[in-house]
Length: 309
Ligand code: UGA
Ligand code: MN
Image 1 (cartoon, rainbow, N blue to C red):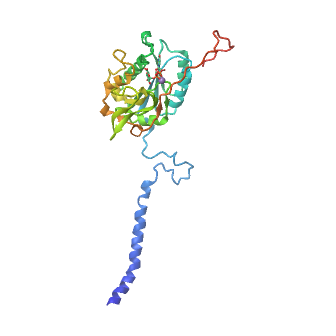
Image 2: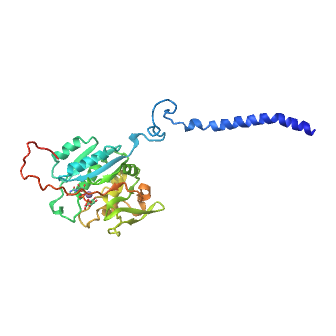
Image 3: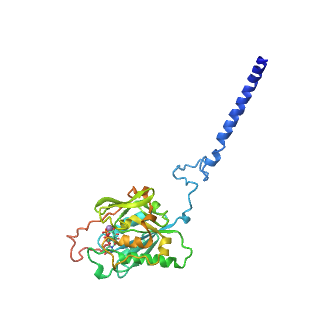
């Protein structure tokens, strides 16, 4: 009896093993079609690198929120060089609309020509800073940033519902990494990040705990409600439109308080969205171009040609 049972077991064993192996192969094959890229590049023999293949879940470019960059700018020997550096960066950013606001009574020929050849969507505005405000120690570019805000609000007044958009203030002399634009593009209300080479320190940054801003690492007036440079935040278009009165103020504003005064009108510290890996990466630098030496520039034009610099 025992040997009969044993011989039957031996007879069945190979079949049981075969069934187990077949089941195993089948289950390891099943997820494969789901993992294959939808683009169909895999196995098609196309010489495309893995990095060039679009990830399947990527949204089409048309759905990306537009980034509006407001840049105040004024005439000086380095102006065209600054604008050239800026345009070279902005041209690499998808769906960026540049709002260039000249601090001048009229559009200058230099900037008009520059905008025409900049190769990116651009709105060219101008407004002069009243002479009484052109003094050291007073905030710069208040009127120009407000002109940019007014244009943005007017443009979207008759376009309900507003297209998704993000606004930030891009001074013409700072240095912007391309990663910064990826970060700010997902701003829901107001986002913040560190700024390099500012406030007498290597960097300033919002201090973040459990995903929330709880303070400011800064070397200058840490008592400011938002101790942040103009280059350190972005605001969604929706917030700009739903706070139509939020502007940069001249009256009552102390030196260095422009950012705080503006942000106070549209958000709270608790609401801020930290970007750049919880505000631990510097993606923008508050660089300042040194005044050029024109000591040998002749008083009267001596060259045989006139060159725009
Ligand atoms: C710091 C801040 O980073 C600025 O955002 C702030 O506007 C400025 O202080 C201020 O004091 O109001 P800082 O490097 O000292 O920046 O200022 P600038 O870079 O000289 O000027 C800021 C922006 O305003 C630049 O885009 C510049 O082209 C423009 N600007 C400056 C004018 O349009 N008109 C001026 O007379 C001076
Ligand atoms: Mn500057």
